[in-house]
Image (cartoon, rainbow, N blue to C red; front, top):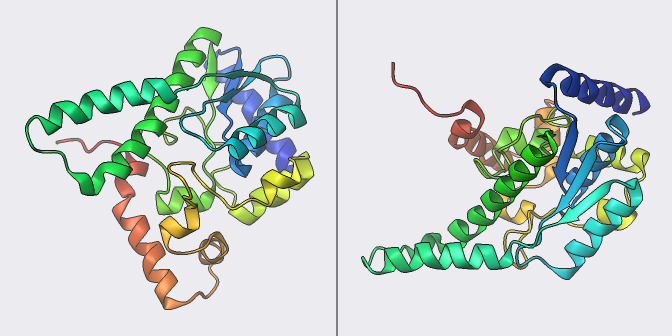
Length: 244
């Protein structure tokens, strides 16, 4: 794990040099993936790294855990509360469509959640422009393969340092880096709505996805779910389709 961390830190430093930026920033949610990335960018750019906390109707515990992460790696931090911004924007969009009697209640929760993710992305890029930093993503191998990220939301980043690491490897890395136990041991959640968890939404577990990615045998039901998720989210990984 020490070798993996050292290699990632070196790679991050190379990204800074190659792109000509001053440093790196990451959105810190209180989850394990962003915690690991916060620790990594602090090591890579000790004086030019930033952790961004962006509450948007977030739970108190998630915000406490986000601050725990900031404290654990001693990274410079800024908090931008997006709750009011989200409400104004979402209500404006909703009201305009409702006037046409075209509001789809079935998709209300997802549309709301995706807007939160995209507002966070916009916030990170605004800060990145201000500081001349790169936006560092937090997707791990399981999330990337299944497409468990919001297109142009948490998937809208410049670089992805842990995208080739399984969730179990990310946990091992978190322990090595000194991420707080309460962050490592919590149920993974994208904080999209109250009570939301990653595994409940995906219909399978990270342990099973990790096993699949390693080529191990898993139950047929889980294999079908994982392969279906991968197929229908290909557009997230390949970018916009181009007419030719």
